[in-house]
Length: 206
Image (cartoon, rainbow, N blue to C red; front, side, top):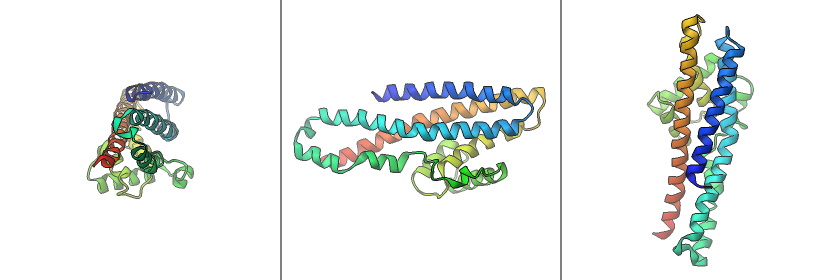
């Protein structure tokens, strides 16, 4: 599977997420608070599971390139590559780990999630979701990525909690924009995974 194929799967995932998110909004037309909780849970859970798949697929794609590389046809060079144990390293560094987040399992309320997101923004020095995610994945903050994802949903739609016909449309637009932004960030995240892998491999040739 090529990196473009993996990215195509990401786009398909977000098309489905949008459909499910709008289904949630339709099911709870007078409760944006409830909708937001359910959308947060949907997005965070799906991305947590899919992140593992995407990393595995990216690793196998890049590993297949290694095996075709002239340099690594030397068995001693290839053994050095395998000793890096990059698959585990990528999982450790880049996965979205929801399972270890007891805070998320215990259903932190909106105010608490929003506080955590504001804290993450302050630590990262940006309010942009992508910048916060990348900062979190660098290990520079001790806030679970899943809570950052949930916080981004909350932050993006809280302006539309007062339900009027006008705000219903604005709420839907806010959810759409959030998912569009998240899709872009996941695609950027995949680029980061690939770049990191290639940099580690390049270090073997120095």
